[in-house]
Image 1: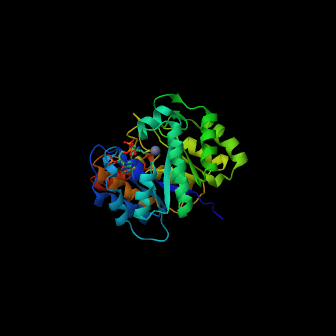
Image 2: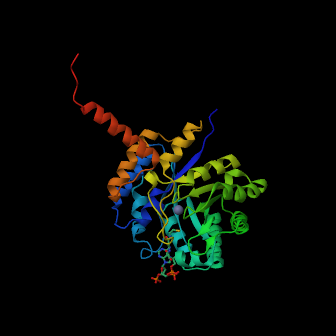
Image 3: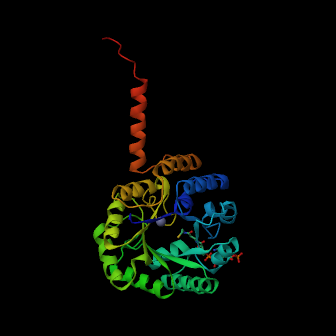
Length: 313
Ligand code: COA
Ligand code: ZN
């Protein structure tokens, strides 16, 4: 039987939070529907953060209200604190994500808390969610490097992962927020963790800033991870991580895994169509390497079809 890989599509949150121009609520919902049509089942839809901190996420409740009601869908929203959690609960979420960055500097820039304060905020959400039967993902961000303080020691990442597991998180998203890592680091982080824990507890959230995301994903796969984040067309970045570009493009990851004989449940043709929608609603060129390749094939086919026929015998 073909082995399944879970892909959490994060473009609507991680991708859109960093747009220089506002994207309409209708545009976001059009993209969500296209992704669902393509077979995406794990979808991070928005974040319930302060609208002044990230104006692009101010319509989180409206987005949620407009999403298709579909029992197959696993919708998730990011919450930085209890207030965000309460807003997400009021909107109906059964899964939320908290954020714990690896250094004081990154936490302070991102959510105005030290690392200890951020951990306490995560614990508050985890405790409330346990009462409510809500599943919690913990993003351990800046896991390979902090945008301000440089490389993150492996022991620090492991400790943060362990603490979030002990506090009840069901999904630890080890996040290379600025795409500064390499496959060797992924092995070094995961190997001891997977000696102690079920691989199903972990996911990899890899930005492709320097082109290493696919290699790192593959390293994670070889360690036993079967859950990866990705962003349609490579959309995104982080407003609080200077220079960060988008997550690995969903189409590149899906293409890689399908080629290697895994199933993701995602239809690559329909995903390709969704990239064009993401481009239209954000008014910017997007697309991972797979998209670039498909487009070059289309241009070549068109040029051949339009070329004048040579009828000389
Ligand atoms: N959503 C909406 N409003 C919120 C909120 C939330 N999640 N958390 C706090 N607030 C409100 C408070 O109610 C308070 O309102 P008031 O002034 O009307 O009383 C105000 O914000 C200040 O509260 P405080 O707890 O002091 O927040 P802060 O100013 O220290 O900001 C965060 C902390 C976490 C809310 C803010 O930094 C934030 O939203 N950051 C998100 C960054 C992000 O999205 N990064 C990318 C994803 S990781
Ligand atoms: Zn990210």
